[in-house]
Every structure is written in C-alpha cells, then in structure tokens.
Length: 291
Image (tube, rainbow, N blue to C red; front, top):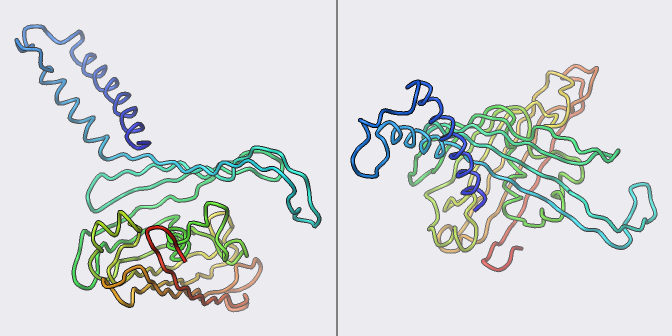
C-alpha cells in the first residue's frame, strides 16, 4: 500500500511536469484539429503518460519506522534506574530504489535517529549500485554484486530470520562487534533454485534458496558510521545451509566469519590488532513462530 501511494503521488507530479513541458513546446494548447473525435487522450498526451508510467515502474519508495512509548522504570547506562513516561522514535528509514534495467538497481537509504542531545540526525545507511543476474540453475539463483555503502553478509540475513529486531539491535551489533553496512563490495547468491511461492508467502520470502544462501565481501572495516583509520581491509563471509533442502526448508544452519585488522588510528596495517570473529547459528522458521 505504501509503495502504491508513493508511486501514484510521484506519477501525478511527473505527469504535470511533462504536460507543462509539452504545452511550452506547442506555445499554446494543442490544436483542437488534431484531437480525435471520441473522448480519448491526445496521442502526444498518451506518449507522456507512457513515459510517466515507465518512470513510475523504475522508482520505488519504502519506509520503516520504529515508534515507541515508554512507561515505568528503565536501567540507566551509567547504573541505577530512571522513571520513564515518554514517546520516542527509535529509528526511521526512507529508501529510494531506481531500476533502469533488469540487471541494475540503485539504492539510497536515509537513517534518522536521535543523538544524546535530543537532536534528530539524518545519515546515510545504504548507497550502492546492485548488479544482478536473473539466473536460476540447480546450483545457484539470483546472484548479485553490491558496490558502495553496502550490506555486510550477516545482519541483513539475521534480521530477516529473527524478528526480535523490532525491539532493538541484534546481539552481535549490540555488543559492538560490527553493524549492518560498510563501504566495500558484497557478492551473494542463493544456493539451488528458489523455494515454492507458498513457502515464501507463508513462512519467509527472504533468502529463499532451496539449499540456503551465501554472501562474501571485502570492506573498510569501520562500519557505515565510522571513519576508516588505516588502509587495512576486512574480509567477511556467511554461508547458510538448509541441510534437508526442500523436504524441510524451515531449518537453516549458518556460519559467519570476519578476518581483518582492527580499525585503529596511527598504526600500520600489520601492527593493528587482529580482528577475527567466528559465529554459528541454527534457526527454525515456521508460519507461526521462529526459534
């Protein structure tokens, strides 16, 4: 619904602009002599509508909002408890995607959050070009490459399995190991063909490879809201496997690895501390619950 409303609004604005440009080209209203007898659009207007329709198909707008009301006592970061009775905004995302061709998509996501002074800041969360190939074979499906400020391999996957995200950040991000985006390059693909549409609609439509999915990348290592303090790069990789495949696709076993150097200023790459992380996760998704 939200995409439809945004698309209609954008189409209306663009239509008005195109029609005005055509009137300027005529220098006046289109001559009545060229209007067809029946009440159909003028041929030139039809072309304008077609151009607007194509542009509307290329553009998509999405938004995600985390709105809260807090009441009662809550823990303070410095210790102790404080009484709370307030409305708040956890995060707010506004995304625009442009798809000029079947093999390419551009994305920009704005991230709004409140800082410690109470001011609301807007920063970039994602800004990348996505090269995608509409391939579906026995081995892989939907391979793609993101370049720019991109998804890192782990959190986007976990967030689409574990809906606890609605209450806050994921465990590893909350413990400041890494976050969800960084400057770099990510390559990914589904393992095997896609699961049936019924499973995608009733259980989960994200990462629907029959045998799982894989994602690999190289990044600055500072995250999307950090500064790159040295020339080192970090390698990250994730593989998620459905061991029973189409027989019981609900079960997934995942492994994630980071290998690089710490993002410390004033150090040469080989002098920075090693940054190595290994993580495993087993997940069981059902129509009514997730474990």
